[in-house]
Image (cartoon, rainbow, N blue to C red; front, side, top):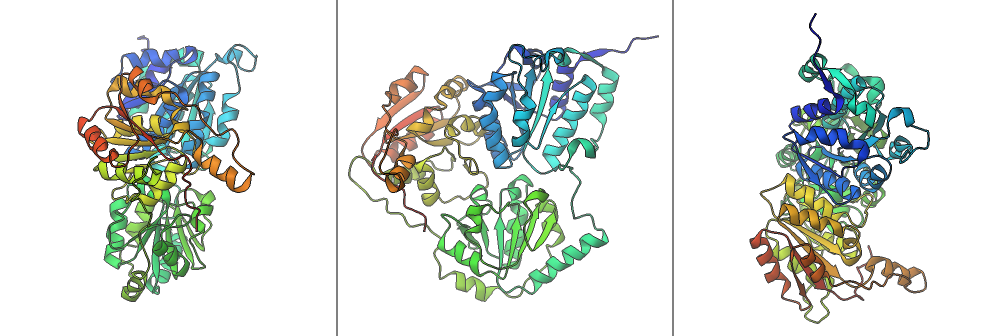
Length: 551
């Protein structure tokens, strides 16, 4: 009798990821994940060696946002896994699909307080859709397949799989693996909990048709309809569907911050961002619409600031965020297909009314003095970046970009909105650049955030990625300083004694220059974009210039 061929679980996992046409994995090796790295050595998958595990998670996050496909990040046990927490929490808050793989101490030592033993799953459970400790190789194969399916078809967010080192090295029957690789992955309700790919209120049964008919009636009798787009439109690959629907029925569109560009902000039907920092036109529309189609948005407190009392039809795959008057747990693309022939009453009067309100944010930028005003710096960066993708970090520059940038394409403004960690921008730009290799990437970062992930300059330099880093140096934690001076009796512990950033970038073999005169940034940006290699531009800006307070 012939003995069945065997394969280590680590090798089987890589085979599954290859079948899914995985191109990049962002990670940092360590002892307990080494069997997986040994398997990667022989794989067509490209491993991107980040310089910190948090950077690996942020890079996978940036890759996912830029490609609208799940990102994958890998770390080892204990410190390695815990270093990823910030990046995973960032993705969770913004519903970014990540497959997070960690190694762990061997199963016989779990809970024995051995070297690097910690309850990793308890840490990841609150910041992931699912966190699984793998107990045997067969379970590992089954769960990773279901996780991939869920990430592609269910509500989006991180899924964490924790593999003890000994389990990674155990063998499985390759004939079973071959069967698994040929399967159309089916849903296990107990495993996938509330993330079932097929669970949707759009299955054409009698109850669902009643809900859809209610939606159609509300839209058809509407005189002031409004579409509010969230990032779920991007994840469902429904940007084009949304624009076609809006144009066909002449319905204006507003967006949440993560969805900016889902329809070009130059489009006649686009009113721009709604809510906190929203445009006058968007917030007027939100307050006065008689029906609001909320597509793929969780309606955060900042978005709700722009809404009035009009009835809300909310569509989202995450049932937990459904708070509208009519709630549909379903895919946005599928929903738009089902109501595409639903026409509201003539909206000409409504659109004419909206024309009276401003769709632009008016910020003065014509300052000629030095030190450079940050809004002048941002204006020159935006003018010089051509059609590059812009990645934001966290800080006062984020507000200036928000106020000054016109977003014309989906996923062309990448940032962390819900969590807002400093240090996001540079590692996220690595993932964005690899996801969109035909595009130049521009990062805008402050001197505080820059120093939280500066080590990732090594990754950028090693891979010669076409990334321009615009470092706004105000020698302080500017936004925190502003809040302290407004509300806490003056600034404290926010002044930064910075290094020579040009020399620092040069030490990483990155071309760098410092600018301290207005008017020079635009030319430097054009040259950097044309060079299409890593460049750092340090811009000395006025440390006393505050962002405008929200209206």
